[in-house]
Length: 264
Image (tube, rainbow, N blue to C red; front, side, top):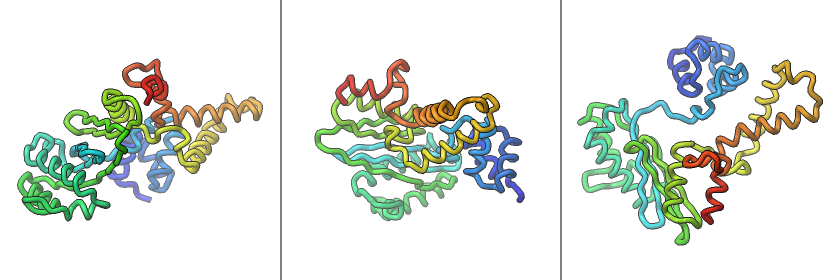
């Protein structure tokens, strides 16, 4: 099948692999993006698994807290030029404030929220017309905490990345540190026990295939191979699990230990 430049670009952004490698991977996998990501990993061409969750869009995010409710929103644009546009910045702030107050259930409900200057959808339409770029509301998340819990928030570079965490115990400084940890290290799960069984099984299968292709593994006993496999799977998920990550302020310490030491 014919592989489009758009498909190659998307795979490059997910894996960091070269154009020709991406095109070959897509060709080998009949254009299936997920299979192409695995194909590149099996060949040792792509080790940039952390890039898989990134979105190829410009724009900004906001995090806002009101009492026991916190919200994170993302608004996309065509270029990063609008990140300095006052109307665009006001629009994001308006949307974030509306979301945390109204607690909508989905994107359609967000767009229907009324403001003094019209609905959110109308504000976005007006901004698109005035600024001259397509602006879209992409996604949001609402988090609630208990009275004895603490919100930690962090916005990186004016909202290129936003993080919102809930902490039990500790203090506001520890909570902010955890938000910064999440923003900088981008964990997918809190701990390894939170990783879905099917995700673990997929990784195990992938590691088995890579080990089978490694001549150095051929002479090893089955029991040794099983231990190596478990180690590789565990290592893969350590970077993706918050508790197993190195604490960004002190790489010698794990996040789990940092929290324990701060009674959080």
